[in-house]
Length: 91
Image (tube, rainbow, N blue to C red; front, side, top):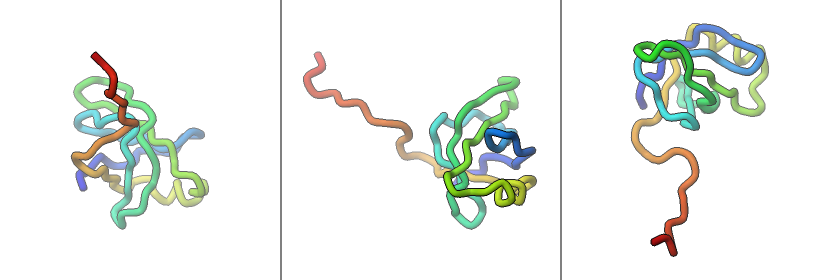
C-alpha cells in the first residue's frame, strides 16, 4: 500500500486529504488496518500539492468518519481502476 495522505477534515460530502501527487480518480482508499474507507471522487487545488475529496464507503457513519480525521490513508499501488473498455471489433 502507498501512503495517500493525512485526513484534514470532514465535509458534508466526505473527507478531504492533502496529497503530494494526484492519484487516479476512482481509486479505493484504505485506513491503516486495511479497511476500505471510500473512493477518490475529485482532485482540486494547486497542482504541486493538491487536495483529494474522498466519497465515504456506504455504511460508515459520521462518527466513524470524524474518528478518521488526522489519520493517514492509503491506496493500493498498481492495478487497474475504473471500468475496462471492450476493444473487440474496433479498427
